[in-house]
Length: 290
Image 1 (tube, rainbow, N blue to C red):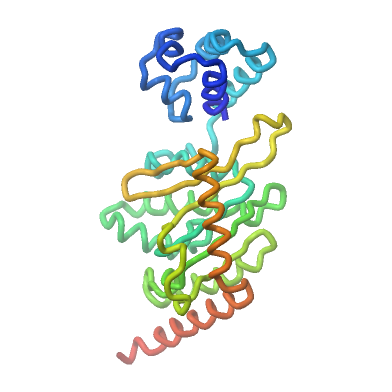
Image 2 (image 1 turned 45 degrees about the vertical axis):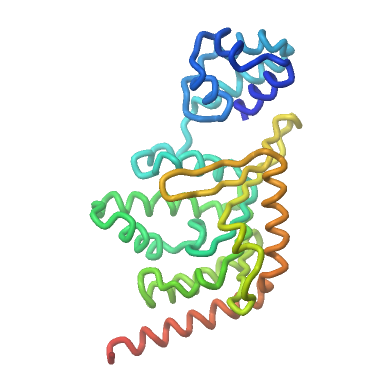
């Protein structure tokens, strides 16, 4: 929020990034971090000086100084810093602040909808030599994140659209998937959670060209211009991208609308999920005899 305000103030004032960084005696990289919300030491004197250079009103300066102070507070998830990849730390913070998350996935289930056993199996595949204590620390972190789905005071709204391939990939084996799909069907009945599947018989559809994404929307701030705009999160193997330009976000919002047209209803999705769970259960029952 602070980064966006600083960037917009500078752009509206007509001050160049080069002049701004020289005004506070920092390098280009430091100013870029300040304006993009990347980890950086936020000196209140820098904020005051930039506000003066940009001609900001006194009340705006006070607001930004307040945001700078708040940014130094640590969220609960930062206690798990050693268990969170660096490029994922920002996402956890954004998800904690979000009021609604839209997730489209084609390979794996969204983390918020995974069982511990599913997550544990994926962690073992990705990091086979990771000590058990570290694996369980990551499981604990995910459990803390999932708690918002049933938090009466601050519930998170989740809309997940999944390709059927996600359900067909037996992460952890058939027994793990039986429990995972049972959990998915149950959590999809929560009033703040929607789970819909694009079936394989839909053949080609727009989402396959778009690729997996997460759209985060934030609550309205009492001061209207401080309300955070939506952000699109795109994850790769070693890094992540955050898109916040209105035209980029609009394209993914439209992609979500298109995906809704391809997906089954929630009721039909639960029927399909339970059908696939029964197939896994039957396979589990036959395994000892094979």
